[in-house]
Image (cartoon, rainbow over the protein chains, first blue to last red):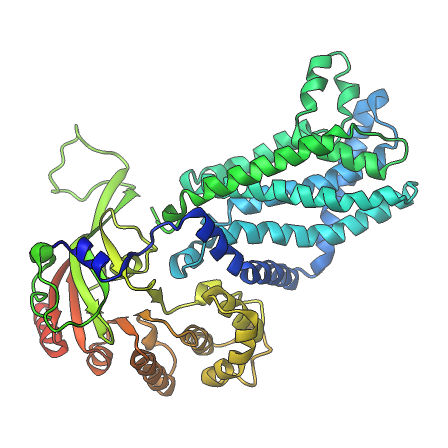
Length: 282
Length: 262
């Protein structure tokens, strides 16, 4: 009798074996309080370190919006969309949620090496926790964003409430992106060096600063392509909801939901299938 | 422990324990290899020609076929010089480092005693108890019940609302131990955790380890202190250069280990 057979007969199980997907997700669900507490405490700890604390959450995107608004407002000249300051504020603030989710998600396993090495829990808790942390910082940011656009002259309408389901779908999308980025960085650490560049590329190709249909008006096929760009869809819906005189194709809700669910499911499967790999230190 | 005093190879055709004791951990011919990117030159005289130099990637064979069995209520000391593979073996036991060959089987998932990595120094001791407890898998209500015991055991009543970074290293170690030891583990691994704190706390933590052991658990103690090994362990495993050198009565194994170091 081999040891493996003997172990099985004695009711022992192989340690570190990846659980089945349903039991993995059930384990992760039981650790939800851990994920939430970690997100909340990390924000608190970060605020302790900076003198202006929580205020930095608003100052950074405000300065970004000011800078981009000025530079690209001048550069675009006549191609500027109407209500350009509002347009940029919404773009910059919402894009920030995506960018930080992806960047922090990518570091969630590699940056928590000691934790991964010392405690056993479903690793999916870590990328999920980072996105929860970003969502917790987004909520006060949204309030500030609303104040800005009201000051800039947007009327408050009941349509604004639709921002809530939009952010919910957006969060699902970001969770998927964070999960994929988390596993990729485990395999290729160098990815963290490339991430700022990837974020920049997405920033300039998502219509954060430009009205796509205006600057690409001579290339209708390219405008057509942007109908399937998830971040562009999200920003277009948000602007349609919040800004006066802006409309959006309602079918974007469907497209963006499909994108989000697909990326999320793919992210979970992709992350889970390498679960045994995350503890290795080579 | 008959049949377990030699290296793992002989276990391939082994017979189950005669006295009917229940095994809780079976380590079956575990190999662990790390592939590391080496930098710089190899030491001279290691016999590798310039032509077949495998630049960069080198394989470190940290464990070379370790096999043993641990039974219920055993308290097993693990000794060996630095770099012998003790910590790698313990990480393989808890499933954090997957073996490249062989496997570890266990009745329930073995856990390392340690929660330090989950804590955040900027936060108060109290919040860290919550965070550490959640990391160990407790529910919020359970932690609320355990909090007073943890604070009392760590003797930090006066300082529990201060940020952890303001604690002395001994106080931090006490808090970490108190949080980690609040969890009843069926199979527990303590990696040199006893060497923290002052004399008095060391004694109390040893007593706590004994208590955990008595509550139907199996404990692995990795330590360089032969005294604490002899005081707390009922069996000792000696790992040397990635192989199981000896396994048996604490006094015998420790004596042989000491002889080899002379």
